[in-house]
Image (cartoon, rainbow, N blue to C red):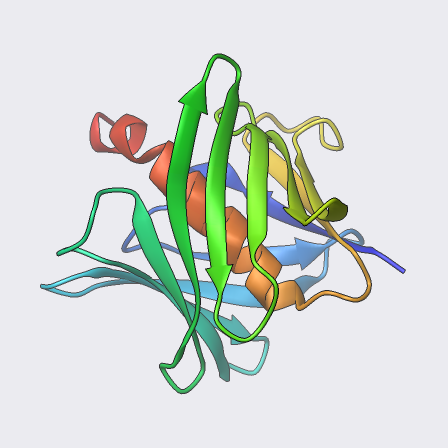
Length: 167
């Protein structure tokens, strides 16, 4: 059975903290935006403050690459921008101990899917909410929710990075 989460887009920026809520509006995961001198980092925590995962920007690599690490700092996935086409962006997610994922759709408008081969494992959409700066992530029941949410947040950060810098 799939689960839906709600993320407020405006709040996703380095240095800010925000909550990811379930579809009932309950706070499920806290994302702590840390500004370190060397890299941008977002730490995912449960409601009790226990670290679950983190996203780090890779500074010395090609632009538009972020690493998702587990609670112990081990790489679990690398998210890279792959292709820009009119109305459809494509991002590759290299999963360390699993099948790779592809993020494809209209990233800027937050209407896209995350697929594992031909199987859709998550859907990201703004259509589920009337609040303009909010989007939902629906995760298939057999997936690692934290990994999928971290991918969605990483893609959102990279896709909208220039916009946030101009604010």
